[in-house]
Length: 298
Ligand code: FRU
Image (cartoon, rainbow, N blue to C red; front, side):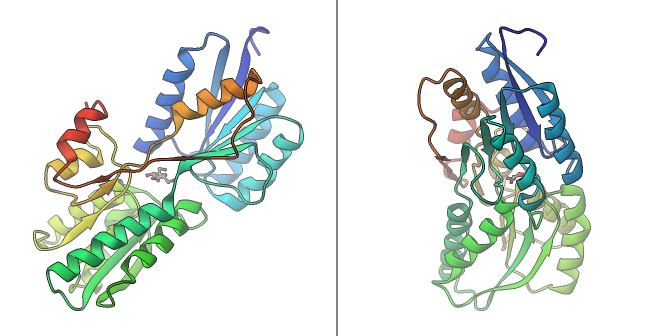
């Protein structure tokens, strides 16, 4: 640490090139600024597991007092997180999970629940419109990242009440808008009879909308669902206000909560909770404007 009076926190980010992760970093920096006793150093793995392992190793060398990590994928990051924890360094895992038990606490929203709500929305929409079969295209997040599996599993539970709903194609675009453009393009070409696009995040939902525009596919009688609901000009809530995405789910980054807990852990003022589950909010045309204001949309 540069200054021996300060606590040094290492923040290991999976990919700050994605807007939601940049927001997480910003929230961590803003929250930490309120505590003069904290110094936060950031590392970015740019979606590379090996780089993220090296980032954490590097933090250990630097002598961090606490690790915050949002792991790119669970399995490849599990051992290095366990190594930090076994050295007695408190570890806060944010949003995506690692395997096993070797971390201090996990903070994040319930991705199974989000997927389930999205599925229930689809089940009801298809029923109300009497569409049968009601065909869903799913654009998934990075396979080894826990939210992708959880959002997929929850969705399947959510649609189960309406047997007319069918997932006719499911493809991976690794959370990335630029990958989701060709992926959605080929999904539309192979499955012209679709009614719903369920994308595991808003950037991939936006990509699907762009592909549809390019292919002159009319989305007005279809549903596009995303997740994240960032309150920014190019974020999901605005997209719902503009009638592009039909539904999104606010997926809080947990950045501020991570810093609050880090302070409590470092000052040993309270025992950390093992899991802190953050709330999600379903955003539709009905509440988008109100929520945009509430979250300080800019
Ligand atoms: C950004 C992101 C978000 C998503 C989260 C899941 O990397 O893909 O869009 O909600 O990660 O961990």
